Amino acid sequence: MALSTRHLLGIKDLSVTDISLILDTAKQFKEVLQRPVKKVPSLRDVTIVNLFYENSTRTRISFELAQKRLSADVISFSTSSSSVSKGETLLDTVNNILSMKVNMVVMRHSASGAPHFLAKHIPAAIINAGDGINEHPTQALLDAYSMIEIFGSLKGLRVAIIGDILHSRVAQSNISLLTKMGAEVVVCGPPTLIPKFIQEAFDVRVEYDLEKALHWCDVANVLRIQLERQNQVLFSSLREYSLAYGINKQRLDRLNKKITIMHPGPINRGVELDSDVADSDQSIILQQVENGVAVRMAALYLLANSTSS
Ligand code: CP
Image (cartoon, rainbow, N blue to C red):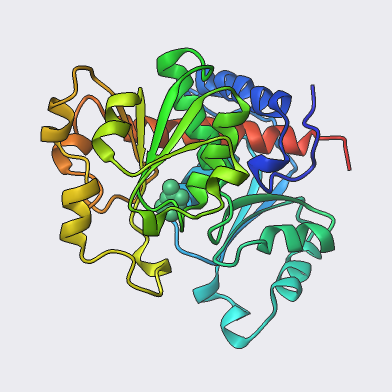
């Protein structure tokens, strides 16, 4: 089977069949990653460039590792050490790299739509590794994979996405994927951090009361407060945010059930999530990171073999 798209720009463009294919393929690659020899020749002779115009720890390392496990040739690029600092445009940079016979581009950029722009202008397959506040499709796929590992299916699963929804590409991609796959989604946070369009654009419910959201859900996906994207004051202080919306042990102990805690990272410890929860057995944060490698191997492998245009 092949994907219906030759780029991975966002979950919005993927069908249920595409998502299932990526998640099923990731399961096979996760088995490969448990073996003593973790490398397979699937992408031998495929050259991939990782273009990171914005900082990253998890996504960048995870993509590089996935590419190396698949035996691809890998080049990694960051703006601070490149001619971007001399004023070169995105298109010039990429066309120069492609003239060196590169097959795929993995790109993170602070501008929403930057990978879509590239996909229109260059022949290589593009994977969006996070664009502004728009989408982070491989994060949503690895989150889905991690939930399926625990619950068996997304159908009917109750997921609360908590925190800074307004600035979160992770929220957009997760909501899109989860609702397509039959999960129930509640978004929870202060009114100033929940965009007005969210209920019209997606089949989600908005809940401003954290206690109610926690009582309702099976999974709480807790998002980072993105201070770097906030150009106006959207809550009074981090301490007040933490008091109203921070996930701590006392709050979880008040529930009559054990919910699963997720976070895409990096965590603001003591703000949206306390350490005694982040490091507890309810948290699957490091399993999410582990699963990211298998999921990205699947996405890279399927796109390299995609026949559609
Ligand atoms: N989750 C995530 O995208 O983390 P990084 O910014 O470290 O890649």
